[in-house]
Image (cartoon, rainbow, N blue to C red; front, top):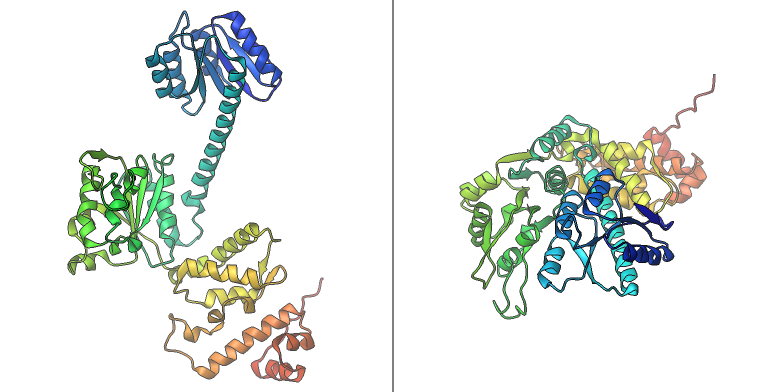
Length: 466
């Protein structure tokens, strides 16, 4: 094996004509592309097995000791994403077609146009780079949606992670239940990226947004002329999810006429496009989510019992945030860091008073409400410190307005608690300079002094160094 070229790119070229091989090698070397020249199919397979892997393969279809198609088949099995270009002196179209089916990205006829081979190899190198980037992004996605990265150290969230680890690798249908905003889609994505289908698509579908008149076409696709405006074939969500996962969000809101058709598609793994006669086979995993009690919907006749049993082989309950309030600081810090990173801002921090406000709130909107509250606070903050007055006004209401203790407190206490939170935040922000804090609050220094006295607001002494 002889290598020419100093580029970081590596091309593996198997060619039994040494003169042609050296010519191609020299031409690509001028372009800065390194070429490893091999003389036989046996040497090609041995080099592939030994590594390191090339960026692109050039394969002559007619070798004395092996068929180029056999080499392509072995290449595709071992490295399905590695681009290959075939070279042939044959006029047989069926060989070219077979090569393309085996993953070849281009073919070149002998005698070759030397400029064409440079263009072809450069295109294949770009494709190889794109495929590596896609693989890197897929790896990042798998890492991002790993169960370990679901934020929260509570026992309730550890239970969710445990069920994801157990159910993820299987093809079992999972129903994810929980209130709106608890992160049901995150759980569904974690299940997908824990499965053998992780390289396939994840297709989310909001059943509440389905138009009853167009839902069948959206799910199963349609043929040209199936209805007015159907100007061509359209693939539906089921086909797009082939070899992957389809996620039915808020399945309790699925229109009833559609439920029977969904049931058949899930059971038989095939369907007909709207206006079509041929059945289309698909291989999909089904994950569903709902904030409703499907048992109750079945009893009321609003959800098919047979569909309920089909999508409910395993249930994962995502707890509301008020039932795992020990996770609030961890989630808030997670959203704070992520938002600062996305907005290219310096890292920020919460004051103890702001964190106290976050932990007192009941979060009826769950994790989604917390995320939006943190994003708002960062938007309103001028520096790198998040104070309580940067949080949404609803959060500054005392716990008397909290659904956890709706029967306690009165209006006077509520007003005092809001005043205390706002004054403390202003004092913290101004280094406890009362004149500046008063200006920030739009009151006089005398008024803030009075309020501090009546509300019992004192600055904790700074500990001395011993």
